[in-house]
Structures are given as structure tokens and as C-alpha cells.
Image (tube, rainbow, N blue to C red):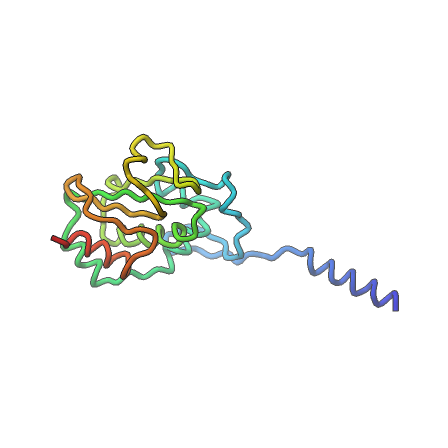
Length: 184
């Protein structure tokens, strides 16, 4: 009986200690990503992106694991994106305030970026601001933005705030952007 117990314990330890091999595939954006449970603890302050940054920062590890998953799996409504294209991008700017520690930010920001990519929105007119879990950022203009929740997408027309999408869209991100830009 002791021999059987010893064999079971050894078998259990051998199975429990093995590492899972990730499945590696290429995203539609051409970046190789690994498909496995995330080993990254995004509540760890060492993973946070704070202050101004470019989207290239969240396209690199450890953030690439959620960025490309969200970007590649989201399919914006093409009719709505076409309406945004018809409106154009002149005199429009966008500020995106997010926390890389925040599940809502990790879900909505890649989707938003996909929409503005399809819309052909000029990347130089989008500002990205990373915040900590107290929603603070080392950016001089930040206190004036009055951020309560993240992500917050602020749409400006002619340098005047036209509207915000806060945390989750009311309808869809693309429809909410269209509603903000077409309201009188």
C-alpha cells in the first residue's frame, strides 16, 4: 500500500510541475502572440504605463497579450464606421485615459484603436494618458480632465470637448463616437 501511495504522489508532482506549452500564432496585425493564460499580474505597479505614451507601448509585452486579443477579435459595425468616414476627421482630436491595470481599459482601448484605424483617424491627433489605480497621472493637464473612471475617451471638435465615453459604451464604441460627433 505504501508503494502505491508513493507512486501516486510522484505522479501527481510530475503532472503538477510541468509547464504548459503556449500556442503561438500570428495576429492580423502581423505580431506573433502567445495564446495561454496570462501569467502577468496587471495589478502589479511594475506593469503600469503612466503619463503620455504611444500605442506602440501597449503593443509590447506584457500588454501585447491583451492588446492584440482585443484588437483582433473585435469587429466594428462597418456601416457606422462608414458614417464616421463620411464625417471625416478635420478639427477632431481624441484623448484616451486608461489604466493598464484596469480590465475595462484592457477590453475597450484595443477596440477603440481598431475603430479609429478603420476610420483612418490621424494617429497624431490621439493622445494616450496612462493612470495609476487612484486614477492619477504625472501629466500637467491631467487634473483639468476630471477623470473619475477609466477608460475615458474624450472627443474634441474644434478644441472643445464634444463628449465622452466613460468606462463602457452606451451602445457600441463606434456608435457612441458617431452620436457624439453628430449631436447638435
